[in-house]
Image (cartoon, rainbow, N blue to C red; front, top):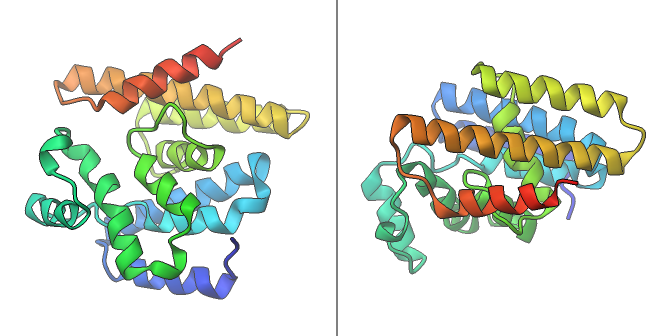
Length: 206
């Protein structure tokens, strides 16, 4: 599925209206990173990735009670997702289907659902959004900066799209390793899908 520039700009304004300025700025950063990464790895899906990036945090700023209510609508229980940082990725697909149905493609819904935790079987489309969220230019943490710089340098020096995808896999693994280490350091709850994703990508390494 492809979206026109007019549709993307319309979505951008709708998302702007439901996010704080700070969150919207991050969202634009993820959109820009997704465009850059898709240009090397999946150019035919760039506009669909832009839609996914613009929608990925659409429920990020909702309260716990609001998140729980949305999960209930989807037949889910918030108790099944003990890590609060994951809640918005679980609720966003339901809100996208309800409020932004024209953008609710299978790719968009899957990538938004997996963008926080990753998943062992996530698609290349999913992976691009996951990494874009981690390396967008607004991320100033040293770990994020290191992955961003390494990935973009590798893209420039790659000979073909297959090499670019291999570099993306390395960036995904690095982001997962860093995320797990940070969550462990801060004593927060870790979603089991993140561990499973890390192990799956580690097994892919030559």
